[in-house]
Figure 1: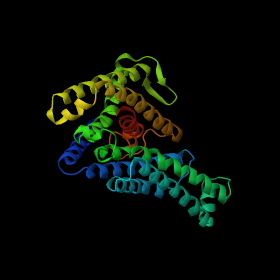
Figure 2: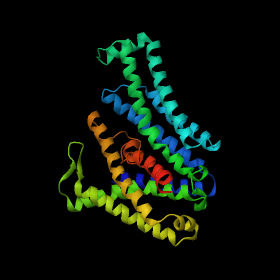
Figure 3: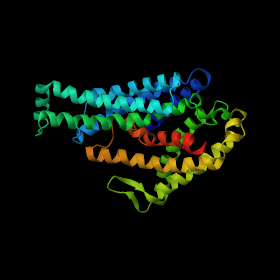
Figure 4: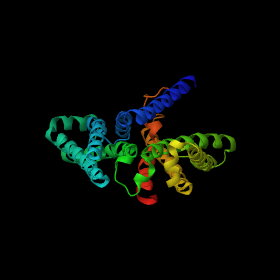
Length: 313
C-alpha cells in the first residue's frame, strides 16, 4: 500500500509539473509525456497480445507512438487540419502493418523458425499476414486512440468553429477534464462498490466491479466535474471558457465520458484475463503497468475531443 501511495503521489506531481510547463513554458512538454506513456503502454499491449496468441511486431508497436506524435505535431504546426492529420496517422498504421508483412516474408527462415518455436501450423505467407493484422491491433490500441490527448493539448491551435471565444484556454480546460473523468470515475466506483456491494458488473471479465460501483462512479464523476466547473467560474483565468461553455454541455461530456472510461477499463481487463496475467506490466510500482493506469483514457481522449469540437461547439 505504501508503494502504491508513493507512486500515486509521483504521478500527481508529474501531472502538476506538466500543467505548469504547459501554461508558462510550452505545451510540447505534455506531448513528450503522452508519447512516453503511449510507448510504454504499446510495449505492454504487444506483450499481452502475444500471450493471447496474437503474435505481433513489438519493435514497430513501440516505434508507432513516436511516429504518430511527430506526424500529429507537424500537422498541427503546419495547420493541415484535424481530418488530414487523422488520415496521415491512419496511413502510418497501414504502412507499419505492411512493413510487418513484408518483414516476415523477406525472412522466410526466421519466420519458419518462429512458427516452429510457437508450435503453429500456418505457412510463411499466412503467418506473415496474421502477424501484420495483430500488429495493427497494437498500433491502434492504445497508441492511436490515446494520442488524441495531443489534439486536446493543442486544441486552441486548431481552427474549430468558435474556438477563439474561449480565450486560448479551451485545450487546457478540456485536458483537465479528460484527465479528471477517469480519476473521478475509478475512485468513486471503487468506494461506492465497497460500501454498497451488490451484483457484479462483469464477473467473468473483472470480478471486483459492481453495478452499484459503476453507477456511483458515474454520478460522483458528474457531480464533482460540475463542482470543478463552478470553481472555474469564480476564477478570472477561466472566465472566457465558463462564459462560452454552458454547464449542461460539460455534464453531457462527463456523463458519456465516465461510461466510456469504464468500458475502456473492461476492455483492458478482458485482454489481461485472456493473457492470464493480473497486471499489464511493472512500470508503476504498486499500480502494475502503464496500460493499467491509462486504460480508461484510451477511449475517453477521442470522445472528449470529438464531443467538444464536433458536437457541442
